Image 1 (cartoon, protein in one colour):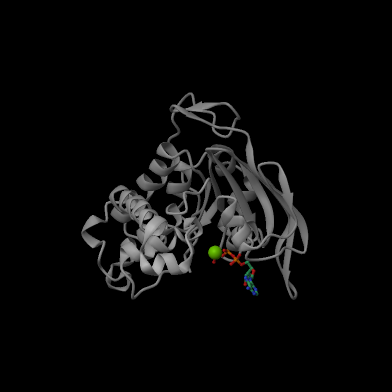
Image 2 (image 1 turned 90 degrees about the horizontal axis):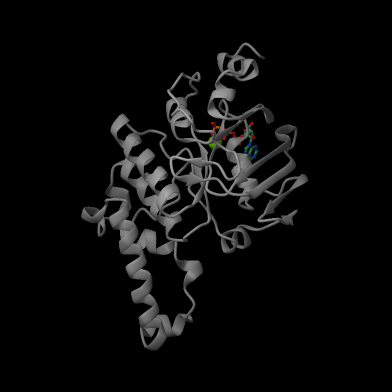
Length: 285
Ligand SMILES: Nc1ncnc2c1ncn2[C@@H]1O[C@H](COP(=O)(O)OP(=O)(O)OP(=O)(O)O)[C@@H](O)[C@H]1O
Ligand SMILES: [Mg+2]
């Protein structure tokens, strides 16, 4: 579990208006709404984890979700990727509305995620862990795969090539054969990102990708998230507690507190919102 921090000031590049459709931001073009969350409510017994939450995510955006511990951030990602079924509300992906989706269907639509608590195969190598992210893309049947003949052989070569590209991109070549459990935590988080990237997602959901990292590891991870967004055009939904990071790299920010949405706007708007400041200072309760 991470600690919460108070929002801090951070310089914005002049002339940028994040989150406006069609707006160029440092050469980056924000597109139409790709993901639309409408009136989502989710309870666990008496705990109202999410209460009537609505917000959208635009293509090519980095959209942050912030809020104190227990605010409902991970629950929100779990609703988006079909792990939790909200009691109310719906989620649209590219204009198609879904009430209940399972994780597999969401993944096929092009949504991948990383987890707050790593979900890697610790005894398996970096390469094999990232390869596991390609499962959805493997088309040949199991027998052909096991025999490594015909189209299966060609397909395996193609997937290995894609995985090697991700390994190069994330600068973890030196660790490709290392069992993931032997790597420092910061590198394990990078492998988790690699596994998600192997799905070639259109939307990448990141649950605290920088938690538990030192300053240098955080800078590296920020660079990778920005590069994924820039080079592959991937839309990113990012949960992060480090407000410096959020203010620096996100286009728009949603703020949750006790399951309610208390802010939604550009980093500057959110930073200056009295409700948000109150929630972070803990005087609102
Ligand atoms: N599977 C579950 N069963 C019961 N309660 C849950 C479950 N998942 C989440 N909750 C509860 O829902 C609320 C929101 O939790 P959630 O994990 O979404 O918060 P969060 O904003 O991600 O917090 P953190 O910053 O600590 O990760 C909390 O009160 C939590 O205890
Ligand atoms: Mg969480």
